[in-house]
Figure 1 (cartoon, protein in one colour):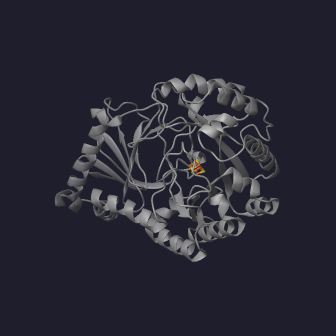
Figure 2 (cartoon, rainbow, N blue to C red):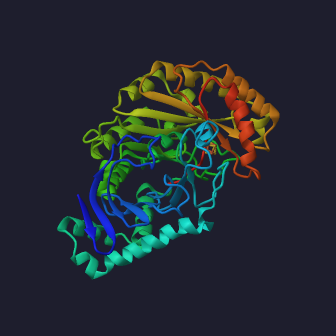
Figure 3 (cartoon, rainbow, N blue to C red):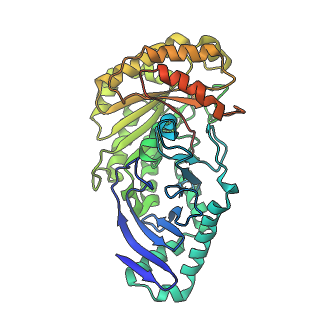
Length: 426
Ligand code: SF4
């Protein structure tokens, strides 16, 4: 139901799109939300009344499909369809039609500083103006009772409250999520984070997301406590989630019992089996060591969980001098063994998909690129779209856009899908 208002905006109390994310949809939208439209902007809100997206409707806005999206970590990310959406556009190197432009340093091959674009910044000014208008008593009093309810919720979530809520989320899970698995792109990075371990097995020199902690699994009590607090934190908007990220950097090393315990408890408490038409997704990172150690009965059990599970493995390189220079304490033969295991698991289990990361960078040798292209050209393909390989640009590349020809050279030789890894936090 749409409620017009004399202040020149329309309120839609609850809109429902498919929970499945259609990547080719313009603009990107999914789930249930409330909407307010002014002549120049469209604002969408979560079921808790938190601002979620802002999209310009006038000719000044860069593109009708572009929009600003606020994450649960309270970062405003600008989604652009870029300069080309054709064969050699964003889709060809990111696997997505939309490029998330981040408000913090990352490893993107294409930087869009949206803060310097007045048309985009007007979106924030329009949001402040809308908030002030909603706050003004005269507008509120003329609204229908259902519209009043949503306005009341929106007014409870001013910028300070949203900032505090992000801090609350991080406090529940014991810190921020410095990086999400690349596979979370399949759900537009909309995951509920649940930490089942901290630290990682290696402390590679190149890594910009590592913590100084040694690897340590969390206790079951800690996991249960997080689950209960997360359920309260997400409130009614939990209906819009069907994906779980088990953190942190090497959750796979936590072992079969803890992973299956956490996934099962979260599935039940978050109600993933209820309203969702789509199979929930589970994401986690694994290291070469934890992946090689994982036994067959673990994968068989994981395959039986009510999730489609992505495990993302950090391979980095198959070139021995490169592994040495980045101080990754694994041997190239182990990288090859884990890579073969990835293809084997992908062919055996319908509900499990192993993906892998390798590095990309000007600083890396031609031999790194050649050995990687060679490995990918010899890969067996269990399914044409399964088991993507992500190339992660090193963060200190001075000319990132110029990495794309190097990326395509590797991609063109690969039998597996190859995309760029954009490091995003939550
Ligand atoms: S690359 Fe992975 S294993 Fe290495 S330090 Fe970073 S998080 Fe840990």
